[in-house]
Image 1 (cartoon, rainbow, N blue to C red):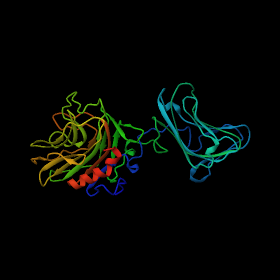
Image 2: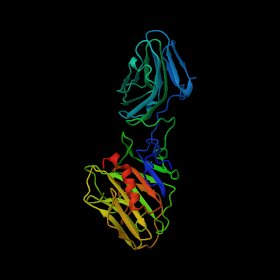
Image 3: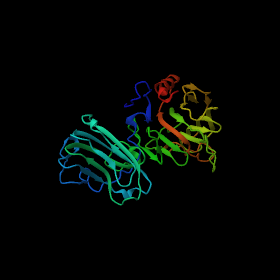
Image 4: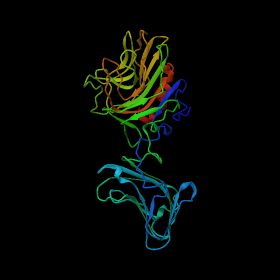
Length: 387
């Protein structure tokens, strides 16, 4: 099990996991990498006959040498028409300075942007430099030029992983258009995760806007009957000004955090007014809830919902502490369909709305976590959230 956060958490029975603090858990936000005008390493324009370019270096790097004269330009060209006016973008690349007798290169995202990146001669021998520049597209120029590197005499540079993308911060390098299913990785390796309309913070966490953001966990039929034990774990924070429960337009069902189903057969963690977290299991006999109230905005909460079919009880743990257990009458079967993170589950008479906030960690188990299991998981991650 490749769960780097790691050996301290309970891994037995784990059937789905994402953890945004684990670099193995995501490949970055869905992006459209702006297409270059031709191939990956061949779409350059040499600004002078005295500039030598070689693509035969190790690891596919571009080696650029300014051989004489007062300075040379090396340019990457991109199809800027894929950006609208005033739309933010990010240019990222790696480079290393092989040699320089004067001032090292000046890198500029050029012509319709407001970002310059410069380096001094002290970078010589510093190894690999990862450079990121952000800007906003303007209609100043209709050319395709986007990166303009000015090089002084007798400078040798290697550059690679040039990536231009929409958005205001860089994501892991990719040479192609990344889809939403490339973005989040199930650490158990068995489920497909689809991201819809999420905002990504600069620290890599998800920001749900409360309008239509959600994550779908596909390829997932568990639990099939109420005899199947399960546990749901999540980290959650709700910002000041956000609704704990969106009750507009028949949203009287609670706001889903992690759950599945509709009406009888629905299960999951949810938020309710006023300032309450719940673990809900709804059978044909009724809706059963273990809850904790009087919670706060801008505060991290570690939530675990546990279903014990042997005792016929559900429990909600908040920051490792069990709330009152509730006895369940097991009739009917769990509803089918994708698990959903962030909203759109019908615990009550109508489909629940979407919730604003951050959910950087979700785990689902096909077992009843014990109090010891829950405490172990909470202890393993509480420090990173300041709990």
